[in-house]
Image 1 (tube, each protein chain N blue to C red):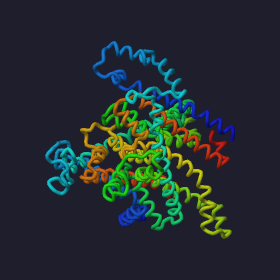
Image 2 (image 1 turned 90 degrees about the vertical axis):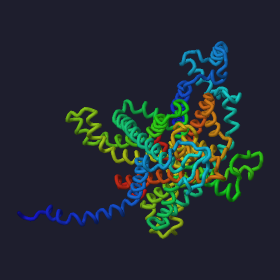
Image 3 (image 1 turned 45 degrees about the vertical axis):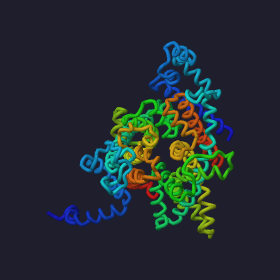
Image 4 (image 1 turned 90 degrees about the horizontal axis):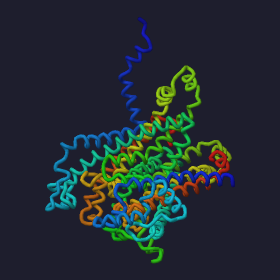
Length: 316
Length: 293
């Protein structure tokens, strides 16, 4: 296991390096001059030159790259062009709603998707199966932002049960915070629940056809025990992989959902940064999101390997 | 001349063909439904110039936010533009982006997959680059590319192609890897086939089914991706009618004018739904082993 952990950790280094390089190039390829963005159109050429020297923009590209990479490794992602604060602290300020939203949505996805997939597999070919799968494919096809708008229309505008948009930090109390996050989490979780239901169903069908399930049934175990103890246990590893994918997808989806519900999270910060051409902030947020994504994938691999010793050998 | 089996077949062909079509519909119901729905959307996009009742971009400030079923079939938006005509026109953008992205992804991803699967020397470096691209959530990568390239339809296509290429490459690569050591490849090589001929004549046809299935899902994702980018204001320029853009504008008038939101979203959902059904059906048909998955 120790060897496996080391190998996995080493394997993410080239990936992160590639990600960082891509993000750096993203900044360099952006048309327009960050100096122009900071100083505005009226600044004199002298002031522009001075600021360029200050920011190191006149140095050769490789030098800039190495300096940026060195800073990034030490956690310094530069200062935002608009917010007058370091990128990292701007991101940290907005991490709470994004993480809460992602976690709650994962919860929604798991608590709907898993049972739905198991029930569909148990009733394979019957109306319950077909109905669940029909709903699932609609759920996958429905864009999150449309679902979000419909939920706002029904629950906030018409019924007035929940706030239309916005966010209350955890320091205002858990319930207050949750009230704002219920609709966004459902919006974001439903599509992933549908995806998970389809995957769970196919994993369960595969496992339910295996010989050890036949043996379990033959020795007279209750169906409930066969399904939950023997079958589900073996379907769980691919499902953990799926759960990792879901968390990652939700991280991307949070960008959209935060925009619909005006939640001041990392995703909304990214969109604002794109709108204002705040390149260092775009760079920093994309890098941090990608880093979280890579770490979650690593975590999933480690959990799977912990549960199934075979994976420690084959995946290296 | 004696009656051959083929004569008998020919004589009984017509009725059995109908019966077979019946079973084809029964077995591939999802594909038929998806195909019909998608054909309707394609027709709508092709016939848009004749179906539209108003100029989809013409703004009439005095006619803003008019409810449906009057002079305007589906009402007007906050700029006084006809929603029905904009939905019809929006189908063009969605399908254009979907078709271009799925073709570009198939070509680029397919090519990378074939090469990396067959030439071990370049496999590792190229697949690491693919891993790097896959390390971004798709939409975040697309937003980043749009931020660099600026609002244009061609950039939307480029961004979404970059996002979906790595997975296509992986799908094709895994097929090639599983076949690279098989006897028919060895036979082709030993009879003097060049590498390109082995790839094109012997390996590519074996990759076609998974490639087509993947391409249909890429199509669905591209339609959703275009709408998402437009919704976020990072897609096609605002002057181009787009379902995602319409939904984004409807957000501000949700309580007074819900009709600005319902139909564009429904059009988008139906299109993606049709494509997903079609993809599921294609997968079941082309890969019987995966059926019921």
